[in-house]
Every structure is written in structure tokens, then in C-alpha cells.
Image 1: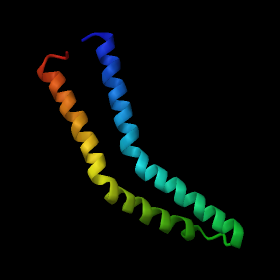
Image 2 (image 1 turned 30 degrees about the vertical axis):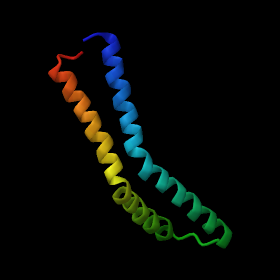
Image 3 (image 1 turned 120 degrees about the vertical axis):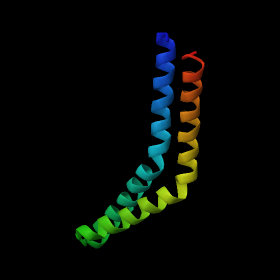
Length: 89
């Protein structure tokens, strides 16, 4: 296995990681931002107000994007197994 192949595997792994983790993380970011703006406007500083909707919507986004995320992970795993079968090439 050459350096170029190793760098290619690492790049594929990192890009897969980013695409799989992005939907729940971006959902949590957006929900947190909206709730923070609402708390600033209404001056309600309740911790459960930020926690409960964020958890529910992040779990909802995981359920919604699960087929997409599993497809990416399956494709990555198949490409890694193909490299193992062909001897790393």
C-alpha cells in the first residue's frame, strides 16, 4: 500500500464521517440558534426550554436521515472491503 492509497482511504473516511454527522449536528445548531433567539426576545431563561426541543429534533433528524447515512456508510464499507479483497489496490 502506497502513501497515495493511504491518503485516499483517509480522505474517504473523513468525508464519510462529515456527511454522516452533518444532518444531526446542523439540526442541533439550527434549533439551538432559534431557541436562543426566542429566549433573548422573551427573556425566558429556562434550561429545559433549550434541552428538550433540541433532543427531540436531533433524534427526529437521525430517524429522517438514517437511510441516507446508512447508504453512505454501506458504500464506504463496501469500498474498504473491495480494497482488502484486491490487496489494497
